[in-house]
Structures are given as structure tokens and as C-alpha cells.
Amino acid sequence: MWEGLFREVILLIELKNVVKSFASPDGMEVHALRGIDLSVETGDIFGIIGLSGAGKSTLLRVMNRLESPSSGEVWIGGRNMAILSGDELRTARQDMGMIFQHFNLLSSRSVSGNIAYPLEVQRLSTGEIKDRVSEMLRLVELEDKADAWPSQLSGGQKQRVAIARALAGRPKVLLCDEATSALDPRTTRSILHLLERINSSTGVTIVLITHEMDVVREICRNMVILEDGVVVESGPVKDVFLNPKSRTAKEFLDDLPRTPSQDEELPKIVGSPLVILRFDGDAADMPIVSQAIKTTGVDVNILSGEIDSLRSSRVGNLTVQLSGNREEIEGAMEYFSRNGVSLEVIWNG
Image 1: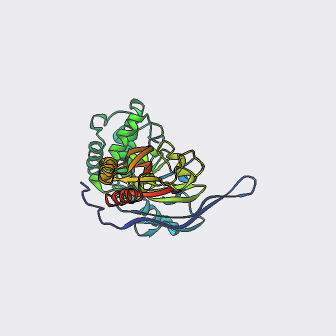
Image 2 (image 1 turned 45 degrees about the vertical axis):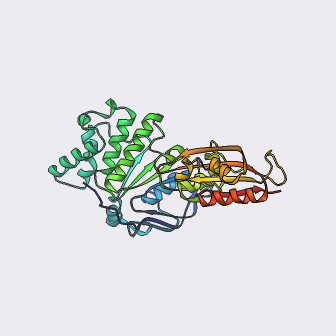
Image 3 (image 1 turned 90 degrees about the vertical axis):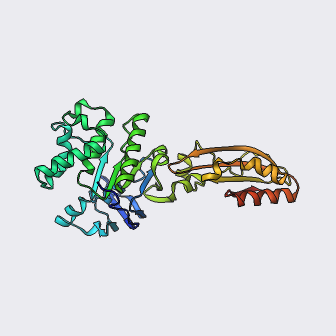
């Protein structure tokens, strides 16, 4: 089908200093996006997360030029969307599919008719449309619903139809605007696993707008966090989970262990440093703490911690207190570092 079609590693999406401002009813200027820089590689599953009003949906609408940026560059597939118009813009948009929170299916068309609609707009032949619709129905596992009406479908089935319709034109990018927010947790997982399988089998690049960290954790490889129209954090998902820096990231990750502040009540014993151990990948599944105790003779008092499963790895962190003589403590720190655990000493009185 699409196997390997978009596998080359290039920057498929690149935004450079993108600004979007609106005039409010009272005449004031509202800055929805303020100097956005981000890049997405071909074949990535990329998450854009932020609280309500952070500018997420505006950013997505600027990407597909439903909104024009006030300034800056929006490069999609080697074309600056910010300066395109007319036929050039319509052609560029064919490389982008989009799905929404509320599905936006045509109630007057069957499942097959909904999937066929964008192909009819592109004026494909009847035979091509029939073949493509059948292909998409297989892709989203709805072959038995070809003649059903949207009113006869569950929420998850409606979103599968929307995905099939968005992919029917074989776009390079699939933009998802809160695509699972209207679904229950079980259906959300099934849709996310479908998107992951589609990404793996076709190579289509997926950009997910969401306010749910569980969505990012489930399938995304890289992410940015928006706060008041500004990118405040970016990088691989595992790095953000291991070491959140921004206020918004810490709010989203408040169920995970976080770096204690200096004001927190942690036991402070002279000669026994407080250390955060951050685990990534295989290290998260190994009994490294017990091995360090056996190897170095150090005493480890675990104060807090958790292991969390991400899309392609497991990460975690522990806040611990190390006790022993200087040689034992230094030996333990060296042992942790040698075995893929990063350390942050937060108190060393």
C-alpha cells in the first residue's frame, strides 16, 4: 500500500517564528501565537499539548492555512504555506488530512459516501474511488459498515470513518485536533493504537493536538508544550517525562514523581546527600538500587518514586537519600552513572 512511501528522514514540517494575532471586539490585539518555532520529522508521531487557551488549535489551523499567520514561515513538505494562495494552496492542502473532536461526518452520506467525498472533489475516476474506499475501510477495520449511516455508528466507529476519509487522498500529514477528547478511555486507546498502526504501515506523519498527557504518553515520540502561545518545552517525550521544566509540564505530570523543591520537608542529614535518580529504557526495569547497595555498601533510603510506561520505553525517577562513608557514597553515584542512570543532587549538606 504505502509501505516506505515517506520513510526518508527530513523535516516535513518546520515553523519559524510564527506569530498569529487577532483583533478583539474591544479593539485590543490578542496574541494567540508568539514566535513559535518547531520542527517535525517525516514519519513522526508528534504531540502538541497545552492547557485550554494555550494556542493549540490556532497553531494547527495555521499549519493547514485555515488561518494565515500574522508573520513567520510555515513549511510543509518543502513549501512555505504562509505565502501560498489559490491553486497552489489547494494543491498543498491535498498533502494534509485532518480529523476533529466531533468527527464532522456528513449525515446524508453513508460510511462509503463519506470516505469517497474528498476523492470526488479531486475528480478521481469511479473505479479509483471504489478501490480507494475499499482500501480505507480495510485500513480502519470497518468493511462491514460500508453501507451504514453515521447515526448508526458508535463514537469510535465515527472517528474511524473520519480517519479513513482524511487518509483517502494519501496525505503526507495527518493533523488531529483533540481527536479523542469526545471518546471514553477504552475507545480512546483503540483509536490511538489504530493511528500508531497506520503510522507504522504507511509512514504518514501524525501531529496530535491534545490537552491529555495520556494521549502523548501512549503513542507520541516527540512533543512541544504550549503556554500562552509560546513553546515552553520541547523534545522527545521521554525527556519531558523524566525532567519536566515548565510550569505547564509539571501540571500535566502532577501524577508522576516530580523534582522536590527546596521548601519540601525531606530528611536532611549531614553527610547523607539527597539525590534524584532518573531511569530511562532498560535501566527502568533493572534492580539497580539493590545492586548498588550490594556492590558499594551504601545505604539507600527511597523517599518517593515511580516507573511510567511510554510509547517506546519506560522511564522513572526516585528521590533517595544516600548514607555511608564518603567512598561508599561516591562509589554508588559512579555505579548509577555507569549503568545508565542520571543523577541530580538536590541537597548535599
